[in-house]
Length: 301
Image (tube, rainbow, N blue to C red; front, top):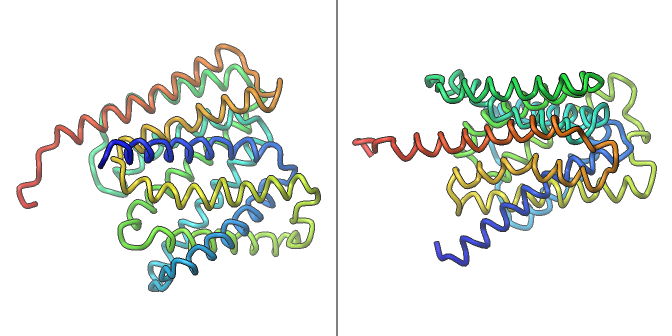
């Protein structure tokens, strides 16, 4: 790939990751409860994505088994978003993003089960470091206990979603996968709200600022980065993508520090724990890169 195209791809990827980091800020300033916030977010993203699919004439036909798998994945990502935003509401952005950083290590523990491979020593060691760092953060802010537990649950759900999606991504168009997953997630929220009696006009934003922030969240922070990230991932190596995505909590914590005031200003020990967690993400990416580069080519290929 020409150097200019590589630079543009790297820049676009970091813009996407920066936008993902900004998502947490929007979750904090939108006054809706987490489940209402996610219901509106998915609905807006669905409308935008469907328009894109119709313009590009992307096929949506899939078989029943695939639809069932996409539906499970859609409910997982929806539960992830709800717990993510709820964690922000009951703690803050910085604590939530630090705990969300553990998602990569939940994935490293779950992947051997789903892909039937051996558990790697470096993943176990780095995972223990992450647990220790999170314990450090927890011990410093005991008042954020439920926020930390909720955020860790969200990270686990995100890991499960990523693994399921990873097994299905090569079989279907990315836009088709996302459409059915978002649709299944949105319908699952509708069912829950229907049974609780909360499926009414109160779920809609009640202020102009909430409408504005939700439109930004559903379009710029959901539909756009998805489409752009798919394009970029076709041009960059998986190692580059993983390394860049690890910057999401960094961007989010920095944005929260400057945009959300004193509630996001934590102690030096908190940031030490956060840096330790983020450092393990980069270390894991480095070990993964070495394993791939040292792997001998398959003689059958």
